[in-house]
Image (tube, rainbow, N blue to C red):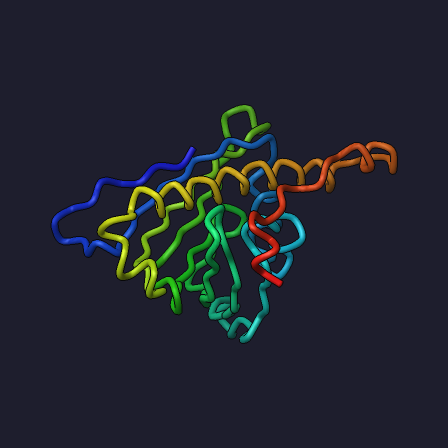
Length: 191
């Protein structure tokens, strides 16, 4: 479930604050391993992540890695932005800074439930849209742009569940029965 945090009067019309909650049958370590490997996002979350390239490796503190992302949601526009890993707490989460078409910060948090069978995942995403169509039309189309984000996060939850099934498959037959993750919408526009 993803929700838009109500806008305060201090927020610009092109600013967004989303909090997403997922509960997945996995350990925090399994979820951390998958989400921390940013370069693999296009493999298992292809509906949103079209391309991801590391442009700078972590420094001696284990942070600082920068990646270049080419992303989209349900709507027929794409975003080009970069993220920098600014904090990590394996296996319980990490934080990024975003710049480019999106400017802001995001924090992933992974908490086990009491049984140890499930992981409660929270993504707190505070971002300003810099891409001209988003920056200039957010005041009018904010509900539509918000719905686009919610769609992207629903496909992320679905894709993560499928990726965990793939990684946990015991036999080739079991692996072959797992469907492909959701694919990008309006893919003909990406060619």
